[in-house]
Amino acid sequence: MKITIILNQPYPYGMACTNRIHLYAKRFRERGNDVEIIVPKPTESHRTPVRNTERTGVYDGIKFWYPVKPARSSSFFKRRVDDVFSYFKTLSYVLRKRRGSDILLLVDTRFYMGLTYKLFCVFTGCKLVAEKSELPFVFSKKTPLTKVFHRFYEKYFFRWYDGVIVISNSLFKYFGERVGKKTKLIIVPILTDSSVFKPTPGNSGEIVYAGVLNQFKDGIFDLLQAYNDFKENTPGKKLVLMGDINLSPDKNEVNRFIDENNLQQDVEITGYVSRQAMIDRLTNAAVLVLAKPANQQAEHCIPTKLAEYLSTGKPVLTTKTGSIPMFLTDQKDAYLAEPNNPDHLAEKLQTIFSNYEEAEVIGANGRSVALEQFEYSAQGDRIISFFEQMIKNNV
Image (tube, rainbow, N blue to C red; front, side, top):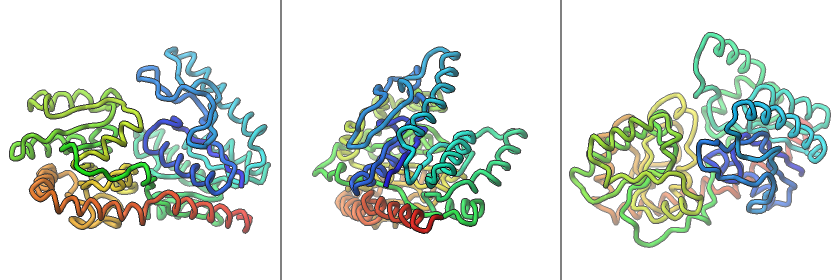
């Protein structure tokens, strides 16, 4: 098959969505398919360190292409020009280089991008597939005008797709009620390449979190409060927050909490780190933690970082949100705390360190879950079969 992926995220270095799509592409290529990732606009902010510098290249065997340089201009006018130019140059590239694609996987929520590539697929016979790992508009501002647009979007937009890949049962239900009669859906949970997270003996003694450092998505204040309570009884354990605090809407509040509780020597905020540095820090941690709060966003997604946490074989502490309890059992293969409850999170940290030998066994069990449920190769094969069946049945 010839598979074209349009990814409106940084590549090859990015966050959860980038890593998920990369694992899709990696398995597609391993199975002998022609796959290319196209990033339809500049993705690197001029306010933060640039991670992706190459317009085109090959990463881990995957071809990728940007229409212009990945770094966005500091000029507002130039950014607008680049966005318009990128749209037309991307369309031209797809028409010239990827016209014979069997599958076009669109990872882009913009209405005009969906319309453009639906028309492309109608005229070329390509199948249009969407990848959905979040509830639409969960991060959008709600105004009377946007609410009208969102209703229109939900009623008509999802009917355009021949197939939709979703990450959870709840998203399967949501999209199942809104797609066309012939649209096919498949649930593909969180993914990991466990071979890059090799279990290591011993640990650094650190409690490690990796992510976006905000409350709404990952419960950063719940984690800080829990750690502050925990360290009163168990001093000497460092909390490491791997992420760029400058990208967090809660930056000032996070820094204020650390200062007010005299945690400057106990909490390390790493800033952006390379993929390999992140892997090394995770695999050497004592505990990996995620304090995801209960809200609409958490209800419909499963955090990708959880699969990577589990792959390390280290003890994992997370909250009982969304689909997480469907895969993990408290004190069998992970530690599960109540969401929005820093006291319970602190209790769980205390439980882990009071019997760390047992925690190591639970961590090993968690890696087994990752291997059995989240390994990218098996899940990628399911997606390939999904594509093949779609093409065979001409759905």
